[in-house]
Every structure is written in C-alpha cells, then in structure tokens.
Length: 142
Image 1 (cartoon, helix red, strand yellow):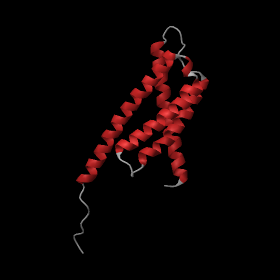
Image 2 (cartoon, helix red, strand yellow; image 1 turned 30 degrees about the vertical axis):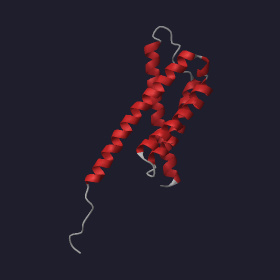
Image 3 (cartoon, one colour; image 1 turned 45 degrees about the vertical axis):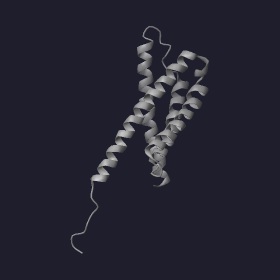
Image 4 (cartoon, helix red, strand yellow; image 1 turned 180 degrees about the vertical axis):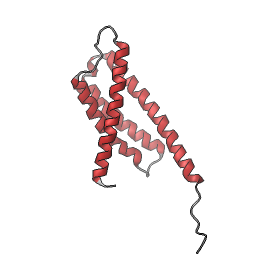
C-alpha cells in the first residue's frame, strides 16, 4: 500500500476514534455531573483525545499484519494502546493526581478495549470461515 494511502487511512480512522471517544466522554460527563459540570472535558482534554486517537489509529496497523496470530495481534495492540493511553491521557492529562478519575478512566478504557477485542475476534473468525468455504478456482477449459 502506498504511504499516502496509509497516512490517509490513519487520519480517517483517527478522526472516527476521536469522535467516538469524545461522544462517550461527554455522555459519561452528562450522566455523572448533572448538577455541576465538573466532568465536561476542557480544550486541553479534547486535544489530548485527538492526539491519542491519531496514535491509536497508527497502532491499529499492528492488527493488519498477517504474520501473527489473532491473539498476538490483539495482545500487542492492547500493550501499545495501554502505553499510549497511560502516556497521552493519564500522565499528560494529569489523571494520576485524582485517584477516582484515574480508576474511572482506566475502567472505561479496559471495558472499551474488551468490547473491541470481542468484536475484532468475531470479525476475524467470520472472515476466516468464509475464506475457508470458498473453493479455489478450477479451470474448466484448459
């Protein structure tokens, strides 16, 4: 694949991930802080979400490698995503200062990743099953 196409895919997927993260965080913020709006993200958090989303989108290239098993791809992707999350959101965002917010954000991250891993595994099984059912082309006329 051409480098321009790869960069475009990373940007496109990063924007989709950013939109999903922002909607989830704003939804959680609306539920948790209906009286006082203390959980609504600031501009700094929005920028951190965007940087994290672009880095996570580039880490998604691990999932595209065909040389590794599905388990190893998901494991390596989890390790990369967790590292990115800890650096971009926990350390740069200052979540390590507030234990409750740190635990809540880690729980949301892990729950989201478990959901992603289940959906990815189901998709990979379906693709593998449909590929195995297809018979190779046999020419009728030689």
